[in-house]
Image (tube, rainbow, N blue to C red; front, side, top):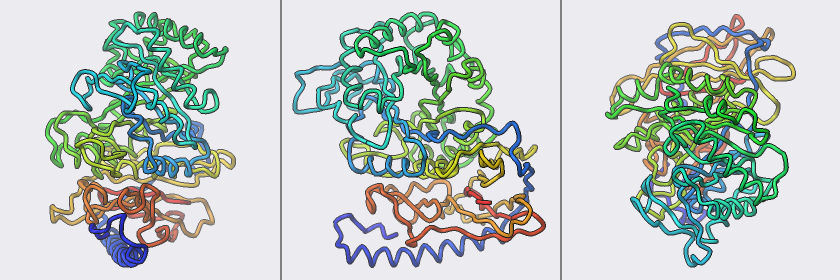
Length: 532
């Protein structure tokens, strides 16, 4: 794509630009695919049953979710964000659930007299610091009327450990009514990261249940399940110190009939340097991802069968992490591998969360602050990949495929048709970090994928970035940093978040089957879905 294109160009110029772009993209794609076949440095033979095994788990139709920091919800109430959410919704058989919450959500105050602005930043590092506190006016709540194809989870503000019931009810009642009440509200979360304010799980339980009672009374709620609990701090969820969802559940919520879901938070990165070696060890590493799961799975198993979700997630929130590290193409591959690993472990939803100023955010909704935007970033395209892997045409069950002792830089997952019990698609992820600027050859892996008897060929669709790990997408980095899924990209500058195909059509390859296997080549820093 030509970076000089702007949304103000005439339709004729846009048509010419797209035609030139399509020709260039097609040639580049053919060349890259040919190079991948030639450069495959190793072959991994996958082994999984063609008929669904008992350890495959349901793939939730609303698994992919998006989160907005409470104080900035109104920033997302525009046509650009609506187009992105609509594109996600179009890929699923159930409405996506949007989460409104975060640190600011416990501190918000409502002022009915505030006019002329949706909010003001009252104290802290204004306008967008994580410690900032906001006063909301009536206009803020109009944002809950947005995204008609989605449902909401929003946070009841519990203050700094001692909530103000008047303010609590003021926020919850207005959010509930603007969002559409029972028809569109999926859950009401009781606070956020409570261990910051309450020293023990029991203290949180006592405070949260008082808030719960106030909400039930104010909204006239019946006996149904509507509340989300825990929202465990990222650094507490793994060691269960001071407490995590397991301890919160045992503190009394295990007998609470109104609890609908349990949420915990996950931020992957811990490195304080941000080169390609750190990226490979920190994010683009399947072993590093799965090593964090045991602490989370303790809580998931303890609260079962109550649905367990990862309600706030991101690549890294380490200070100083650049955009290329936190939201480049390497972070996108982390995101999709993390999401699929979570799904295969019975996590019911993963929320791709952010605020406009967050470096890890998958998109920036507007240009209201100094951080830039509007823009789509590579992790958003990873969400599209995951949603398409789940699919909308039928119910499916997912299974992670073991790659033996060599799992750090590659992963594989298979989806089974829940009705026929037959494998119908496989996701392959090559996490080996590659940067086009390194002038190193882009090698790859060949995956031998077993298929059902009588299958003659398979279709392959690719998540790719010709620039490699540091690509930031067209909006942030221009044409040379394009990121596409099956030939489609999402941008603000070209399509206002609606998505378009670079070549004018979906891109996929046909791979012939030989001896019961399809040999699928996946270049370093790329992921594919194989449709069986």
